[in-house]
Amino acid sequence: MEDKCMRLKVSKESASGLNTEFVNVETGRHIPLEQAVAQICKGNKNYENYQVVNKSDGTTYIRSKADGIKKNNIEE
Image (cartoon, rainbow, N blue to C red; front, top):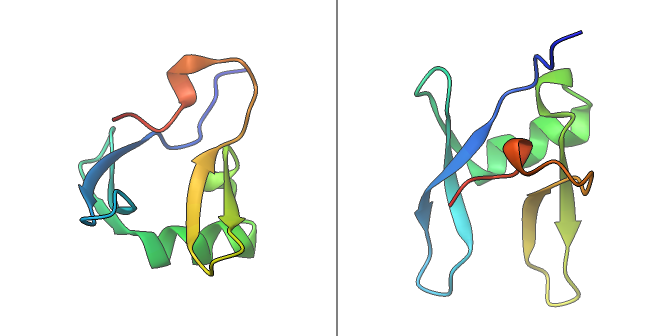
């Protein structure tokens, strides 16, 4: 069965290096960090390869779930 989850690539980052916007590699659609976080938290299957991380300083970001497969990581 082929993986149908979207692949994200970073398209914008803040001065501190926080990824603030992503692009869906297949469609070219831009996705703000807040929207990606909301979709992951809702359990949207398109985002099932990603997880939300909440740092102790209040920063929230997303990352690829660790599975040892580089092709589904967030691309730089």
